[in-house]
Length: 156
Image 1 (cartoon, one colour):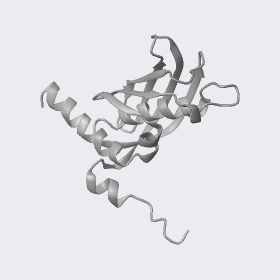
Image 2 (cartoon, rainbow, N blue to C red; image 1 turned 90 degrees about the vertical axis):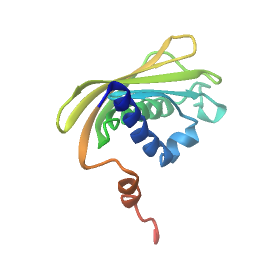
Image 3 (cartoon, one colour; image 1 turned 60 degrees about the vertical axis):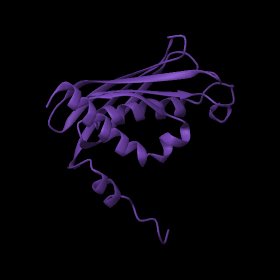
């Protein structure tokens, strides 16, 4: 498989995930670039994302970084989830800021991986650094696998 085919396959896997990622869609997260072990996403900070100090809530920044991490570690088509994640907040994000989260693989073993994510604002200033550890599940990512693994919420 060529490099371009790998990138195309990675993008297909992540577009499959994104189609069912209601949280990312509702947050306005956009896919900028996907490759094997790599994801670049963007999002604009809007008023409902602010905390009491009129700054972007840390949970929103964590969610953006976690989504970039998830897309990078699922890019090979093997289903993976986070086993651990941490974030360091460097500077505040404000309403109107356009953020970009770039996730890159540092190590990917058979079952576990290590990924770093950097969030920058529209001025290229670092907003946060995130580190995530992944654990691969047994099923590969496919349209059918994702639909089959949807939780049944009837009766709750």
